[in-house]
Length: 406
Ligand SMILES: [Zn+2]
Image 1 (cartoon, rainbow, N blue to C red):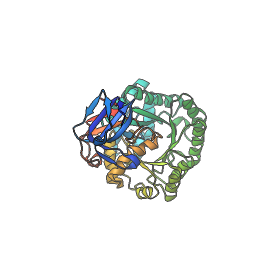
Image 2: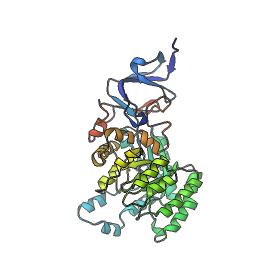
Image 3: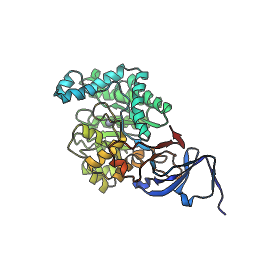
Image 4: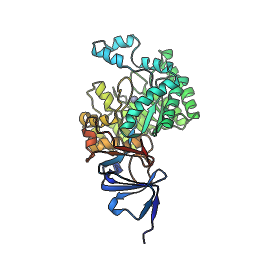
């Protein structure tokens, strides 16, 4: 005698792509039972056990995937850099733009000058675009404040976004993003300030879920980044790293040495970086939007990540300078077209592997019993279509923690 299950809601009538183990694992005509915002049963509708519920939703075909996860963004910032974009296309050089106060410092200036409310409104506009595409979890970094007060302001705005909209927000303190003007010529003094003041304070206030740094010739050296990581460890925060984007500094190895959740960008990662990341379980977060906008030619070593079993995640890197991307769906296509990832790898990159890059893989990223009931219902018949279509085909419905998101 099979006992009766009672659940809050029951959903069926579509094919389900679970993404367990990074594979599609398609369940034709699947069903999911949800209680308390979590999946309590998933499988083919034909095998559904005796079940009672007060809320039943029947999809008329289509495809269900896990809610999408954007695991690397700089979504909170003041102003934008469309004027610079236009200037460059009118023949003004990077050097002239920088000499006129352009580049990242112009974003720092605009972010510092903006009120919390202004930053919130601007970020809401961007976040809504990502939500409309089925994003149910997003990481947002600080890093345009570069002072205690304005880094905290950015992180507060990021937290607030998660209170306003039905989405999970993971925040990352990226104070070691660039050198603020008041520390010009004194990068080590700034790193002292980041380690002794900014990181401990954002940790005490519970504003950051992780710490990140930008390891590059035009940002901070591996030695400086190592000090930031030690401060993060002292504060009990996991780490991530902007590594190997424009040159090889063995950033992947450095991230792995500290057991980082992820190393991100990685165009110039070497075999020893990839090996170290594989051993440490560090996720490779690939960012095709920045690669595209900067018209880079060096691709991240995708084949090597495959060979060493390093999970690959994908993200929008939404930021005003190098990736003003408000579409995670577009990143799927770019990863396939530019980096030659397969559509299945690309989908894993914005679901289960993105979850791992944020340390939330135990509750999100795949559709299975015990995980949060976060999914997207698409008017599509094959999962590869998610990477195939350039835009369009927005979700028919999004469910966040067991509730249909309007
Ligand atoms: Zn970034």
